[in-house]
Image (cartoon, rainbow, N blue to C red; front, side):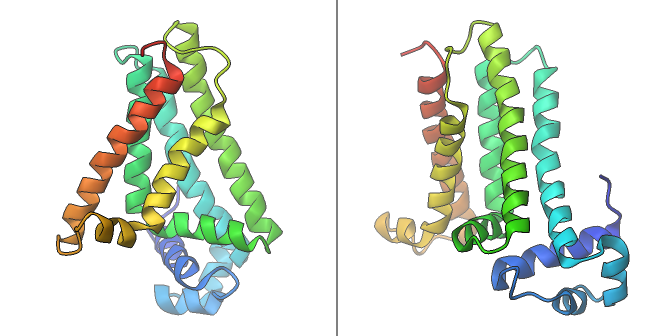
Length: 209
């Protein structure tokens, strides 16, 4: 779905507030006040807070599906390179959209709102189906092993990046990086995570030792 500028503004505001205050701790009035719009506009565009959350998940899930379809139709890139491109994209997305991923983590831990849990489940299902297309493409071309556990592979990617995001302060302390600027730190982390996950993916997906 294509959203106009005002809708994107409301979605972005809701994302920030949901990440900081939680879904239950954020009211529609909070979102309206923060976004500089009236409550009626949010109701007009989205209908309810739950539908607004649904729009947020829809916006985030459409990105990976589009990228996968683009990679599938690019015959100039080898299957492993396509997976590596997806890894870099996902790492970059988590770093840029930390608020959204914090929402996902918190809501899964709390596990109180069946609507949000259902949205998270649907998002995971769409992402799994999209990534599975790339893996099957690689298998058909003889580049990837058979009988790959797709969910375990995805959990390797998501778990590694999520844990790094949640424990970044400890990572800084452990490696003596407390004094470097935040942007430099994240660039270092992205580079290290990229190499780490790509190494694991190559070992899990390909016949190469």
